[in-house]
Image 1 (cartoon, rainbow, N blue to C red):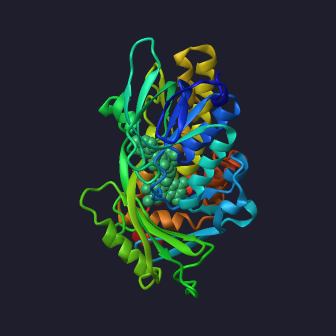
Image 2 (tube, rainbow, N blue to C red):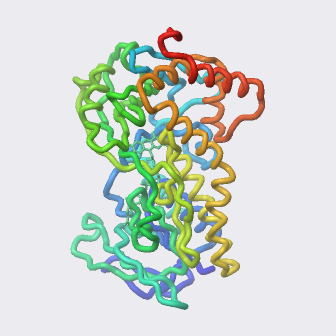
Image 3 (tube, protein in one colour):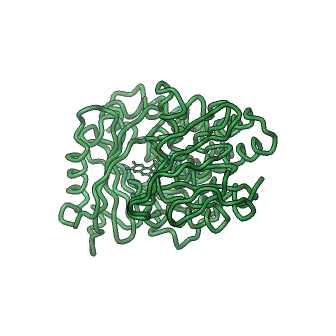
Length: 419
Ligand SMILES: Cc1cc2nc3c(=O)[nH]c(=O)nc-3n(C[C@H](O)[C@H](O)[C@H](O)COP(=O)(O)OP(=O)(O)OC[C@H]3O[C@@H](n4cnc5c(N)ncnc54)[C@H](O)[C@@H]3O)c2cc1C
């Protein structure tokens, strides 16, 4: 593999010169792309990392504490730590789910988190390009030719450039350009759309409405007919929002209602933004030759929770490892390992979460039962352990059995009899 330092400079913008050929071009410097670029650069690959760097990713920013350990994330990146969640049913009934000693939910601010990850990739040796991928040209036996347009703010008036790479990692998010250019439209993952508002945190909130160390999760058909709403603390800010795949559902109206319920209707709004959440991993992440998708571009957001950051990071590492093998062996089949290993590690959890969403999020009657079930200590413990440890915890099979039986009871008992 070549390193950026020992390759001749072939093409340049007015301000930056680049090697003639990169081993890998990573398109998108969110969590997935940045971690993949960092890992590959550390292994000695010549890596181009392309990101426009001009948009804050709309995101609630919640990550399990183990992400800090698994990806060596600096603790200063956390703007808040939540030690529990409160789930709220359509009737207004609320259930507190404390994490206890098992860990915490860390909150990152994507305005600083993503640039931090990109700086890490750059420090490891990846070459940054501040701009967007526009086109990919593929000719038999030749490296991929990428047309990149520099971001206007970073390089005003600069023309698009063409750079070459043996392989491309598409880490450019839910609306991936790489996927659009190199995969069939039929491969596009299924989405819900998520919208949130970043608002100033209140100085002295009523804890009945909002707490700076608790994530509120609202299951209510008026807020979302098929997903949920949230109020997540972010230190000096709060993320309030909801998601839905139902056309015509008014996410802004629902968010206004959430803000009012949390006593946040009077606080200043800093940002209003939304983006798709792809809730199903694609069946193929590679094109069989030279392109591999990762993170949201490959559809790796968990159903039912909408959690995507941890999985994007994990996926980025697996993509990097698969690409390194492909570079070393010159065998494109090696790219398949990324999806295979991801699905082996998380496929079952995604399946269970998908079923959970399909069953419990389909009506207010079911949502009411679901929140009731969350009061169960076994459900709480297994939920937190699975979230924090990122696998189905098998330590206590009897707890699984008890939860399964109570699940069944909730499903078959009329709501009126459960009060
Ligand atoms: C409203 C909302 C709330 C969410 N809340 C949470 C949460 O609390 N916890 C959680 O775990 N997940 C949450 N998610 C999901 C999470 O944000 C994503 O799963 C995660 O960001 C995926 O990371 P990624 O690196 O794959 O993609 P992204 O973070 O989307 O990064 C893609 C990068 O590619 C860049 N890019 C795009 N197009 C191009 C191009 N043509 N050329 C070059 N670069 C390009 C973008 O600028 C971006 O930097 C939320 C999502 C939404 C929409």
